[in-house]
Length: 193
Length: 193
DNA sequence: ATATTGTGAGTGAACATTCGCACACATAAC
DNA sequence: GTTATGTGTGCGAATGTTCACTCACAATAT
Image (cartoon, rainbow over all chains, first blue to last red; front, top):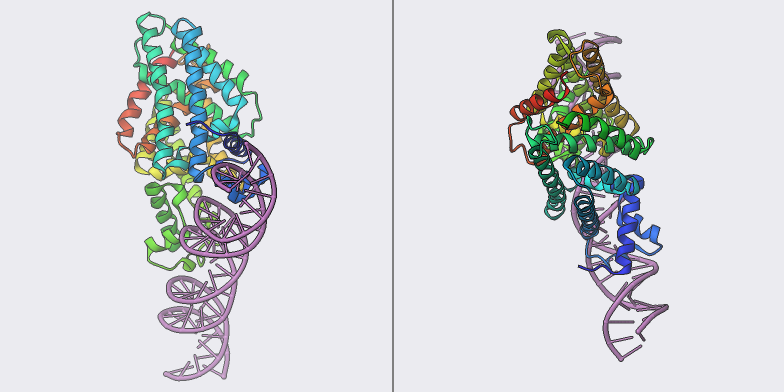
């Protein structure tokens, strides 16, 4: 689906509101106020609030797909690819804190099939790619192969999530990218052959 | 503070509701319906909904303190202590899924000082203890000391959280305790000297 | 002139919370 | 021992607010 200019403006406004106050505080009223139109006008562009959220997720999914592709393209070797992935991800969160707020709010979407499935799918795809990179690295004897790839992937993902969550809850009180860099160095030591 | 019988009943009912439908769906109406009294009667026992949530957190905090103590008491050696902690934690979540729902819903409490501080404090205390165990283990040359203790702790905590979150979102579709056991074996390999 | 977008008022539902009243039971007063 | 008074608990109705969403009408643009 192609979004109109107004639709994109609404989506972006919603994203910045989420970054500021969390996804709980996202209301149609807030979006319209920030844009400078009236509540009901929003409904000229989206049939429901859920559709706006879906728009946000769609945007993020495209974003993520791009990152994954660029990682696979540029870096060579499992360790380098994982590092590139890690770095890009922190960069993405850094530039777009709302991404973290949305993507880590699975609970919030729990009662909505469309939304929860989309979040689940994004998580799933990312996880799958990491697992494959790790497996390849294990076969090349670049990464230690005495532990299951999917568990290594869980360790990577879990740690990344925790750091980002802490960053968010501390109101972005530390530099996510440099913290992420340090963390990667540690993880690298643990998983290298 | 000491809770009356009714208060404990209300807290426990709230906990089971959270386990069933998530913290978003917790309403005074639902609690009262499940107990079999009228909404307003709840307010004879709690001044506000927040006070009920605070009651839940208090209960969990006591629970956690007990676990931490028992871990420090029984196990000897850093690795064993960490394993005991891991195991107990998964056991606790397994027996009390609402604990996970509550403790990992930091976003939900974001707009409430009392609640968010309490959650933060629980997280903090746990993390601190893990860091100390790890540091001790590093000094004893039991754990590898070429990586910072606080980052190892983040890896441990982050991974644990991820697994529990997945378990919750998959509607408890796998056995958390045995999955946690396997995961611990992997982590152990990574962090041992 | 017709399609698109915006406005203002309104609706209904969900929700936390308040209030006046009633009843049971205990304690104290006569 | 009966009467008064206090206390704890429950009920039903109501209040006030927030929210997503609708609709008739007006402005604007092509």
